[in-house]
Length: 422
Image 1: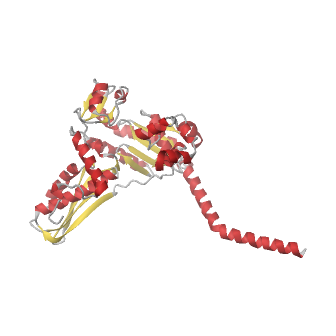
Image 2 (image 1 turned 90 degrees about the horizontal axis):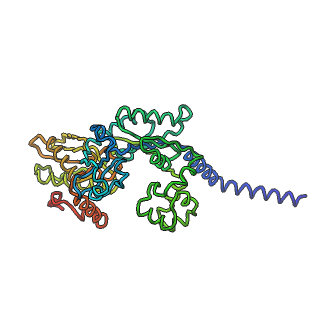
Image 3 (image 1 turned 135 degrees about the vertical axis):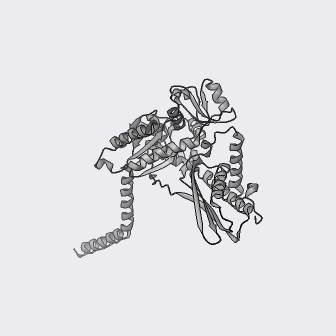
């Protein structure tokens, strides 16, 4: 009938209008779903050198094999930087006060660390990975992530990872473990379970069965304070945390709660960021008038080092290469760089900067510009490269950084970096 026809026409027009209006939303939804499927089908490899500092020392001194070894300060006032598995059986762990470590394991061999030596071996392992890996990220001095997504079409990812691990052990002589799974979080946890000197693959369908019985302490981001909070709530394993509503976890643990809940569910969309040696941070200063005043120039250099070092520590990074740039009044520009042990401390970096400047400045000519650049940045906490007995120095840096974070970068400064214009 005409009435039914008219209703059908209006219904079709209304449906077409709704479809056209929502087409952009549908496309956006489809794109998100495709991206999600792509993320879920990733293959990520995590490599971690076992007790790295101890392994390097044992490589040079085989008599240390099988003995409890502690790398750190030789004074009771220092802290443990690394320890062997034999020492861990006595309760020793990284970051522990040396006085406590001596009490727990009095027969341990204590070695003052050599960060320059460890940095050299770290670079060797990175070079081996760079020669073979399609996409890798250097997370710290002893950790790497490699994105192997899509490789299964041509070669077994597990077999490739196994061959890479054997190659690293043969060429460096260092033990290394790996975990292979669908994202960074699961791979890192798998590496921890594979240690010492092992390898473990967790297929996508086995992620939850693998994670559920493990302690929540195994989740990245869960420190001692967070662990105590979870235990006080009756949450001991990842499986229990995973079954809780995400909103309840967020309300109980704060803004990081939802991230921890996702990791407990084996969800981690963070990409493997390409590692580039050119990754730098730098600062330059052009003088208002060309100068030959060495006191003023060194004050400027000191201020640059102080500022960059603070940025390193705030970002929890360390530098392995320092470059000093100098431009004379006639615009001749020169620079010189030096590889160093990974660090983020002003006093160590300032020594290198001053030494490089002394090598560069070889003319009796006014200077127009000076600059400092830090490169080969890696993630890591700066206390790893301080094996001295001056535990007060660590506390001093922590206190100064805390003041700067609250009141600004210029709130606390070295006397040698303050110029007449400041």
